[in-house]
Amino acid sequence: DQQVKQNSPSLSVQEGRISILNCDYTNSMFDYFLWYKKYPAEGPTFLISISSIKDKNEDGRFTVFLNKSAKHLSLHIVPSQPGDSAVYFCAARGGYNTDKLIFGTGTRLQVFP
Amino acid sequence: DAGVIQSPRHEVTEMGQEVTLRCKPISGHNSLFWYRQTMMRGLELLIYFNNNVPIDDSGMPEDRFSAKMPNASFSTLKIQPSEPRDSAVYFCASISTGDYGYTFGSGTRLTVV
Image (cartoon, each protein chain N blue to C red):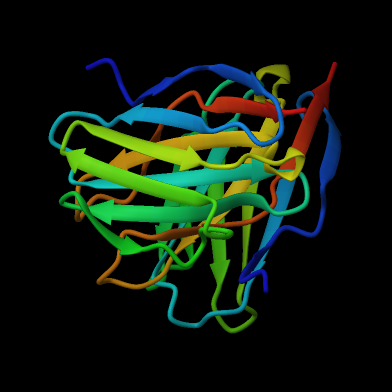
């Protein structure tokens, strides 16, 4: 049973436009959410995170939104750049007393010129 | 810091053979995680250790898989006997308790023929 779901396996966006990646979760005990970015032949790297007590966190071109009532979070990238082309994983932490992260299946973002 | 170091980067083996994957976490990190990446399930947690002790091995697929962490600077994931369905990329990650973002290694791509 997938507790963290990324229903769009791929997304294609033109350079300069906004990219929106979505993630849904089922467990209301998750207390922290993270986005990771992965290039081919490399390990995932941490991108941005948000605590469950907040609804928005912004870092430069990247903004994560959390809607707890809908158990939904999204990552906005604006403006999108070709270097953003990668696989993006959504992850959720199982609670304040654990380091365990549950990951989604990933969304492959392609930014074209 | 050299980051999380995994070896080998690639492993091709025949069905039925034993495979051992290795991981050196970042010095000072006290939690270590083994994940497997597949198209269908994304990043799937196999097992994690805290202070060298296995905390959660519920993701280990079956008895053919075993993991050890004999000291704070080394962990192994062993598959014996290996099967073609074990083919995947295996990642190791580490973190200090209280932090949020894992640091991942570059992964080991395992192919069982």
